[in-house]
Image 1 (tube, helix red, strand yellow):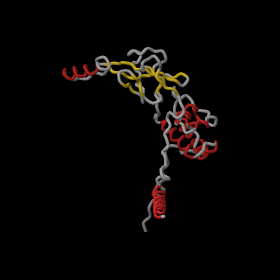
Image 2 (cartoon, helix red, strand yellow; image 1 turned 90 degrees about the horizontal axis):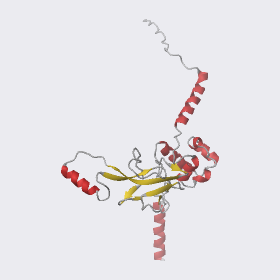
Image 3 (tube, helix red, strand yellow; image 1 turned 120 degrees about the vertical axis):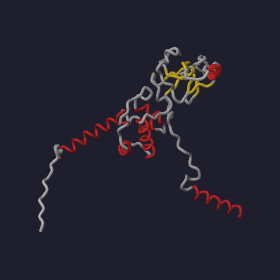
Image 4 (tube, helix red, strand yellow; image 1 turned 60 degrees about the vertical axis):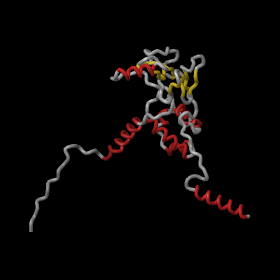
Length: 246
């Protein structure tokens, strides 16, 4: 009979956590994760009421129940139900928009930086076009085309500037173009929820916070929706045949 020597037990080189400290570590980790999932406020969306206003679907009626920015992005679906946010599709919609906002996804106006009392001013500014290495023929063609609506080697963009700021290239340095809007023709700003300023010939407009600006519209169910569509239409055809034969 062959006897084997027992292997010595290898102890870890680092101390194992104590069982009574484990729940505390979990609580601290949960708090850190929850805090990291709360996105920063933006000039266009400074509070929870504005967020609920923008996403629509009558969620503004729950603004008193979700009064803080932290609670808006930390409440679970169960907690929202206990607060009275009904029906369930409204809770799912709110959670869906929360996740989009965390990822930096927003509707029109979400990228505006100069906002006063929920109103932002946008302007058409002519800035220098980035030049590339082209042939003399291409250069002449591009210059001739550019002079139709703008100065040579220039382009027109829509930027968000503080109210009263002149529409100069220097004022627009380092400012990003406003997403969701564009310049139509020579100088007219077009886009959803645009309010042209009188006397500016379309070169200056305002974007104002309104209910439902970011709302994702629900589809209209036809003949009972996808699952019942065949059944509803079959019954309708049968009814039409009975009426025709009778």
